[in-house]
Length: 239
Image (cartoon, rainbow, N blue to C red; front, side, top):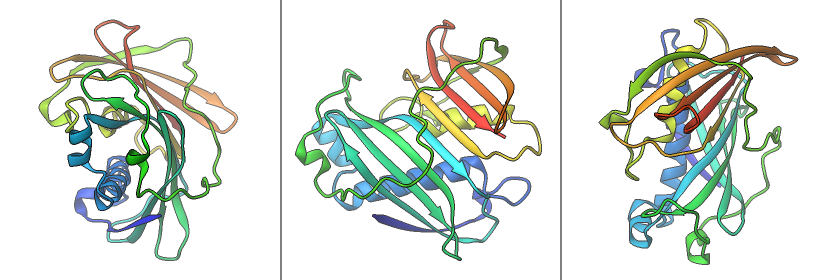
């Protein structure tokens, strides 16, 4: 397990002094990346092997949102590797030792040049310590799409959206989708399914759908490319 200590600062919060969803994603991804760098499997290693870990899905449960200046521990560990997939948990714990945010994620090892999955070698996982999977709901990676969507807007992939792999960063999809959460709504869960990469300069069409389910209200944001069938990512919120 890798542990990263995090203090909630102004750049992490929203208008209510709660840690924003964007701030949560930054903390989660920072912890994962620091873990990889600490064992020599970070950006330099990825470039040398011409391979990279691409996120396939996120399932994030929020028990409560941290407040400004709270002291947190962000913990991460992989719990399984298969031929070309890795599975990882991230848990954010408050000063009382309570787990307040937990995440399950699926990752694919891909060839940077082709974007196609490749076999995970022993050298790719050396240094990572496998631990037990965190006990949270296992929802898989596929998000069921509602029958009807309302088109919202078209946005252009900006330079600031691009990560070191040359495509739109994982958290940017969630940042775009956040605009369609009703003001004042309390997010209980966030799921993301990544389908296709987005490149600099591409135009993305955002469409939304909302429906009531047994657990609360479900809001789905579909982010597509030039054609509606070219779905880049699907973000689902449980309110």
